[in-house]
Image (cartoon, rainbow, N blue to C red; front, side, top):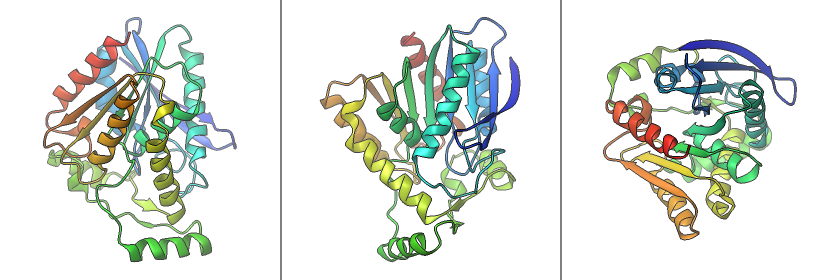
Length: 279
């Protein structure tokens, strides 16, 4: 397995850190990986290496405001900026490996980004893996919190507060939690503007299922305390009724980061099996 890090420039001149995990043999396909809120792509190093061992290239970026990339932590001007960053990732993937099939894989906020990307942008993906997507939160912020957030959004749009994410909700693996808490590249900053952009994008994803035109594997742990498993089921149910090519896998008792759960080997085998079935 070969690992490389690089840097790309987004549509507005912002620097984005890029990462590439390559198998030693000729790759079967390339998987574009889109990380979640407050984290970064290198947290998926162990996951990416497993795919490389199975003959897949993993290509990823830290999108704006995350990891080693430029951008205000916890702030986004508009959700479309995330999609434009993913445009950069896809174009670079096509340059690197123009002859092989591409997939896209998004987790949490990355699942929301990937969903909106495949619904709104032309693409040549053989399929998409959407994991624990942030279409809706598993809990509802109070009415008072939403009220004040709307006021702050208007007065101080770049103000960021702490998201107060419970790290114990990520995984049953205590090692994962410990590493997350001590990781200097992880942040929990969130501005009201970014929250509402993500919130509205989640609604758009659920309202535009009819635009789905590629195969999708949608998976969620049914004990996820962070993002809503119910919302994922809603997306799946709508897509199935429209006869879209979608598979839904609900993981019993698992938390938010399926790739970091104690049973991650089982999750990996399932995802790889699905991807290989689309080649």
